[in-house]
Amino acid sequence: MFGLMNFSGSCWVNACLQSVLRIPEVQTRYTDGVYDPTNPIDLALYKIWSSKGDGLKEFFEAVRTEMMPAGQGIGDSHELFVYLCDKLPFLDKLCRFKVADSIQCKSCKKKELKEDMVTEFSLSSSGPSSPISQCIMDAMTPHEISDWKCESCKDKGCTKQQLIGSFPQVMVFHMVTTQASVNYSSILILNKIQYALLAVCCYNGSHWWSYGRNNVGQSWYTLDDTRVEEHGPKEFPLSNKMRLLIYYRLNN
Image (cartoon, rainbow, N blue to C red):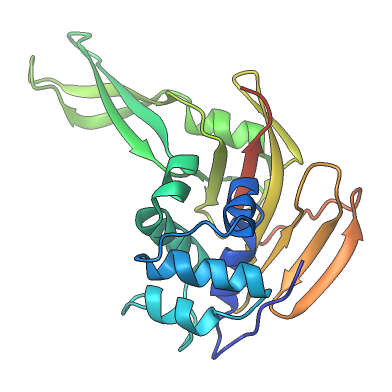
């Protein structure tokens, strides 16, 4: 583990990078010296990993946009993660999975399925500490939409349900509600598939940081800019400031 310098409020960049760098395939890629020399983001990440911290300024220049002032001000770790998936095909492949909205008209019962591919699953919580399994179930519970209009019978009203169609190697959860929290777990079972938590990205309203481990059974670390603090494998980092969770699939 190594820390990352904070340049003009770049804690959000550091928190995102420390989370992404916990993914085994990312570590193997850069340890083996594999990168796309025509992709400045990939090249900068390789430099950061191989030098244990150098290359941040090159990374800032590669990802900086009007909405993401990398190295020049505060941004959002979640937005940066989405951007990295868009610009790094290997990361996108690890995280992308199929979802669908199942919609049924209440009058004529006609069904339609709208499929999509995404790189994260959005979580919301109505309580101070809802279990992550309950939040996932709530997101997939059928609900009624009264103002939806059926193209077939022209009546209004439908039942809509979100479905997960595939399960990626890396499952990323994004917390969309900021006034509530999720009680997440180190091991998560989805459709009989076991996932292990590798990284937690947190935000307290003014500062971003992360917790991470390199593999199941290894020590957890606080990764807060240049501060790297080891906690041991049994000191699980449960935080009500969580914004991103990165889980890694353990079985096929």
